[in-house]
Length: 618
Image (cartoon, rainbow, N blue to C red; front, side, top):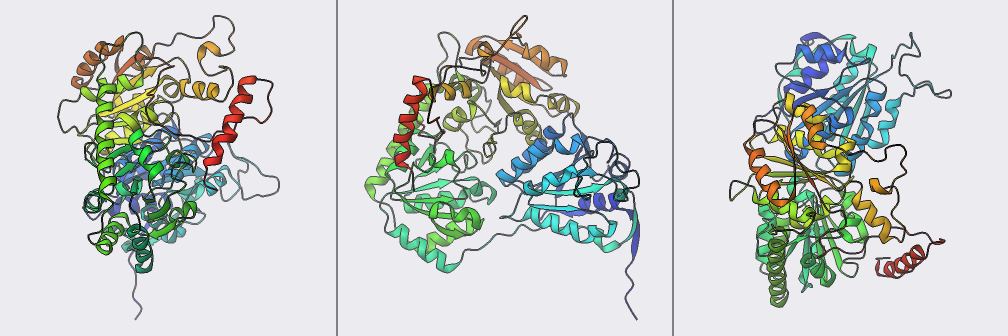
């Protein structure tokens, strides 16, 4: 007698939500924290009904911008070190394409998010429908095909029963340590509403386990041989250290073998800021301590980093060092012709340490590293400790005021930021001993991520004070989720540094020999009354936040006391100097300069560019 599966009749959309709601982590938490949704034509009738039906077990959050809600979902996953995540759904047209930037951001940063854009009718009976893109040579194309190169896994569900294979594959991609990234399931609006008799066991609560890839012995042996020949090794800690929960293993490895540690943006907070072997930030936005030793290192052990150009100084910073790359992702492990060890960061470091036994770096190198690290900590204290500032403060002084405002010695503050000048300053100057206390989106360097990302972080870490630091340019690009943070009672402290334009790119423009042009408001083409005088505090107030504009560091410090005591999202705006930055640290970054120009400054910059390129790894 054949075994008869018990079935339950559900629409495709109902089955999808029910399946997601049943997934659990090993700690017993729901794998998905719920879904962000902006309903419209293409998802309100089908998926919207399903989300309503399961709202008690799978919460739905309304947002104000599709890209922003996806950023919030991505930040939620990053704050959970990729162990929990969220879904995002939109309508079929501009709602879907508004998700593309966020999808690319998640892909670049190796972060999980499940995107569920609505799609056109499979039946084609009402073809073409509202918002449908028509391709005269391919009738199967919709705008959602644009997600294919941006997604780690893509599927279009054209029969309800396809969920039985598509959903397990989607979860596998979202939780794979190497392939982790965005998954897109395009959901045609008619298929969302179609019913199917699904096996009941498909919805049985199940535990999702995160695999830790062990190292291959032969790769470990090769890496051990390289390290044992080194006298001046350096560890570069990337995001994989945090995602692999390898902070303790990194610390033990560095201490046992006397190897100093430098951190990428994604890896910052891997080692406490005051650890004696903590050299600080590395690369273009790096500390002089880290960059000085990187230029002298004979072996670099890169752990969990994809070796972006800001980390490597466009492949010039440690071009002469032998590279050993420990990474769970084989693609990243083979960057820059290095020796790859494909493994989980914790397992890889522990196994490598066991083979190295009592081997250590040279005593002189260890002493130099400790001296440079201590010296940089003193410099950071001097920069961020300034209170009496003549004229407008710059970002480093603002960062110091924010850091001092913490009410505890072992702060649980989480600072959130993305593109512009602030990443450079925060990478060098922000101090944290809490893994994840520095939340920077710098893989895609996406302006507008900051406030939406802050919302996602607060949803993941409600007990922490989440401080969003954002420039005026990024604020103007995307600020709508201030209203969402108020609506959800997810308090943010937002510090807007107003330098009246795109100060970072303005300085880069001039460094490349060009005149200031189209970056600062004062240098833009203007007509009528000219550039607006923007009141950011008043704007935030209109979105439901508490807010104020302050003058100087003393005013900022007083406002931060009020902000921390406030009951809801609080925005503080301060005018800053667009010309000053932290002079210490940094290294060369390749930005192509025109080979021919009528401007003398550009010609001079091109000559410098040609000279500086000679130090690159070829």
